[in-house]
Amino acid sequence: MLIDVHAHFLHERTPRKDWRERNASRLRAGERVGISWHVASVLGSWGLRSPIYFPSPEDVTLANEVQRALEAEHPGRIRGYVVVNPNFTAHAIAEIDRGRSLGMVGVKLAASRRADDPLLDPVCDRAAHHGLPVLQHIWQHRRREFAGQEASDALELAALARRHPRVSFILAHIGGGGDWLHSLRAVRDVVNIHVDLSGSGVDGGMLEACIASAGVERLLWGCDLTIDTGWAKLRYLERLLSAADFELVRAGNARRIFPAGSFPEA
Amino acid sequence: MRTDVSAFLGAYPWRKVPGTSATAVLAAMERTAIDAAWVSHLPSFFWRDPMEGNAWLYDTASRSDRLAAVPAIHPGFPGWEQELDGAAQAGVPAVRADPTWYGIDARGAEMARLAKACASLGMPLMLAVRLEDGRQRHPNDRVDELPPWAVRSLIRSDPSLRLVVTHAERTFIEEVHFGSTPAEAARIWWDITWVWGPPEDHLATLIDTMGAARFVFGTGQPLRIPENPVAKLDLLDLPPDDRAAIESGNAELLRRPPRR
Image (tube, rainbow over all chains, first blue to last red; front, side, top):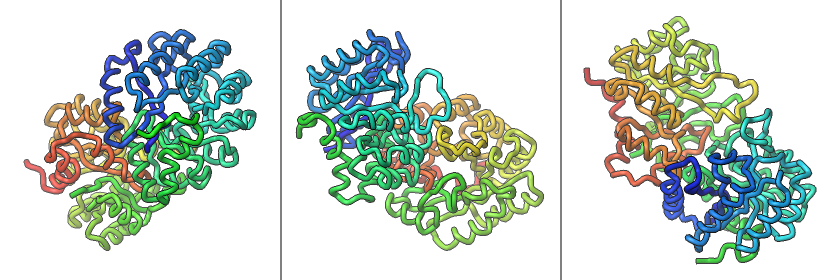
């Protein structure tokens, strides 16, 4: 089994006219790589009606409905994160409850509010209640502010993770931009943070550093926007790890932190 | 046959990078079925006189029939013409100049003189757009990335010049390719290491719009793992001839004297 813990799908009500082609391309490439499950989220209207990282409640609801429709269309291939905007607490909690009742398996926090902000506590409490992991969008070592997002880095996620030791957190896309060395030091001793290997970065030494910092038990394979780099890392890890450890990164660790039964064998 | 036109030997100053020796690069090539590599000397990007790394590079590359040296030429240093002549006599596949690292004007007179000299020798000139993702660079690593207008300017500077540009992304490549005449664009080769595969399918789009003849296989190793461009190609449904051209055929054509 191979689980991509960081995938996205587009939909009709986004600025992307090529949304069908991109979704189809993800699934087609996934078939070639051997991805058993795409664990995905839809980030609102991807900017059409509200900002990607600050989605309105209406866009959040739409996105989660789209995500569930994709799961229904591909019941043996796609699983979903409930996207929330923590600035709308009641709405976020309701979305998590509704999403979980309809089979969604995790919570996606993008960049609507800093990770260490108290407003994320009720979201994480609800995730704990349902036994859902939380995937947090991360800018590796944020040294300044960026327009369009209230980006968090690993130090801020670590603060949140220490407040919620029952929740499994996923540090998003270690290869997705920024100083991954800083992130790996920040999460080294925070055992409920898992490192998602996705992102376009394929730096030499990065995977070895991930193993040294988090250990293979806390690594999760993923692609995000570039399946080619995901496949490259997978091929590299196959040579680097024992068969048992490789299996943990491919799927075993994900199966451990997502709700039981999330990824049935084909 | 698979030829990596963009590999490096030697240490990187901004972070610990494993596998920078020739032995390690050869092992990585073995692992990824890369038959040959054009190698540049990584430390000399950052040296005041990058040509000081060429002797080590020639010597190291000469110890393996799978490595070919791509020496650096700094056109702002006295004696660069002799260094270029030496490179031509050594039969190197290309020389490189990375003006933003050298601190010289990428569109200035020095680069123009180098471009003309390379053109007269039929020597391809290689340039890197970047070495690392700009979002992760060391705070003191403030070298500008090579801008697309510099490539457009260079390719227009001499009708015989051939360029190999590495580490460029889709938008950069398109801006230069479609901002050039067909004759100019036909003298530029792009390595695929920084071009995204699915689901955005940038590489498939570029090959469709520009043709496979414009692309060469490059890894950027050991700064990047060489599995990456192999995976990119494995995710395409290319005709075998096109794949072979990208993996080695186009690089082989670059090694031949240009048609005048």
